[in-house]
Amino acid sequence: MAAKRILTSRAKSGMVTADDVYTSDNQLVIPKGTVLTEEILKALKDYSIFAIRVEVEEADGQQKEVFVPEEEEIPDIKELEEEEGIVNIRETKAFQEFESSFMESVDDLKDVFNSVVTNNEEVDTGLLLSDVKNVISKGKSSLHILDMLQCMRGYSDTTYVHCMNVALLCNMIARTVYPDMTKEDLDVLTLAGLLCDIGKILVPEEITMKKGRLTISEYNIAKTHVFHGNNILKGLNLDPRIAEVAMRHHERCDGSGYPSGYKTEQIEEFARIVAIADTYDAMTSERVYRAAICPFEVIHMFEREGLSKYDARFLIPFLEKAVQAYINTKVLLSNGMTGRVIMINRKDLARPVVKVKDEFIDLSYDTSIKIKEVLV
Image (cartoon, rainbow, N blue to C red; front, side, top):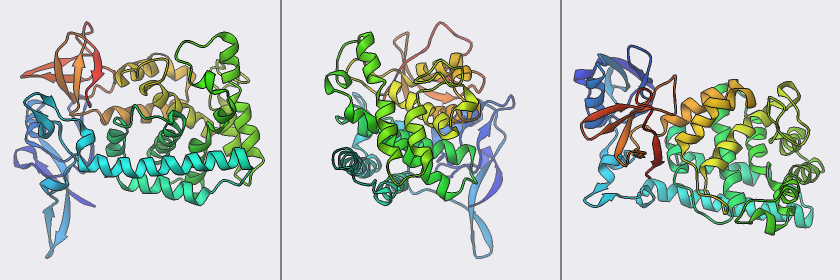
């Protein structure tokens, strides 16, 4: 898509940004592909953004700005607000189409897991990859897909939903870090994410579905899923990296993971990618033994200790992309106030700028307040 630079004062609602927009001190305001709204335009003015680049198309030998028709826009939180609060994004047409495709894919994944483990059948890689690509096609961008995944919470069949999420996140990481990755390698990584937890089928349900904290012996049994997964997958006609990922996606770069305490260079590269996606999705999702953890708390955890445990080449781009998905999202603050994420602090991703009514609160400066919950 072609692009041109225009004065912010000439920008209009419906235009689409062709590049990320930053302040003069290199703080991200809005990401590439954002559909401009009146509120976003006001924010650009508030942060003294003089000019931006927007998408254009050729028509009759001239460049004309691309406008997204109102009915095709990704639902903006302002549009979803009603007198009694925010309408759940699950009610939007975009999410309903995404959810339908997603859950059909999860059903197929469940069937594949069972046929492989129970009947020793080969993995139908064509079906699984087709399903993932179909889900991806329902999103307008990687940010839109992340936005939809925020709402894919609270479903049964946790393992299968988790594996689909991991595959989508891995696909996004690869496209962000390795835009020139071959189709074959991208397919292998996607399948590795989908199949990383296949071994959990052989772990007793009283452990995987236990509502309380696992005992040491139960936790040791739960950890055997990596051996089960490796044994299942290495006997199939699959790229050997897929079985290796099943074994190593709980290893950590500092040697603190399991099963072998491997460090960075000992861990298959795709396993290092899956480890990030697996951890992020597991922590931000509801589990039988705990509620979902606020994404900004998870991002803070990654920023605090993640650079030693995870490969920074993949972690940093992932966190920057993940946090962009929360721009313009309504959040509950620890002081009980609600606001909207307006700008991301690149040096402190977990503490963005939040607009509360007509006030802008920079959480990187006011450390007494933090984001308690994302309201979707």
